[in-house]
Length: 50
Image (cartoon, rainbow, N blue to C red):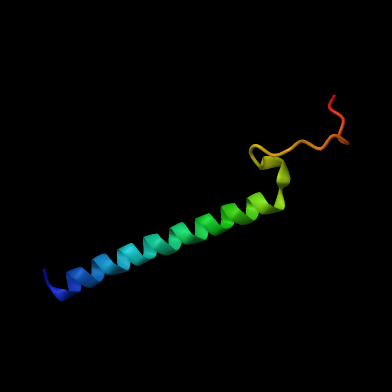
């Protein structure tokens, strides 16, 4: 394998890693802003269900 091929693979892996990090951060921020989508949370007894 030549150096340029290895550099290309490294660039692709790095780009995929940054994409995954960005998506993970976006999902974490979405979950921390909206508590209604949390799984297994304790229900608030002051909220009445219809």
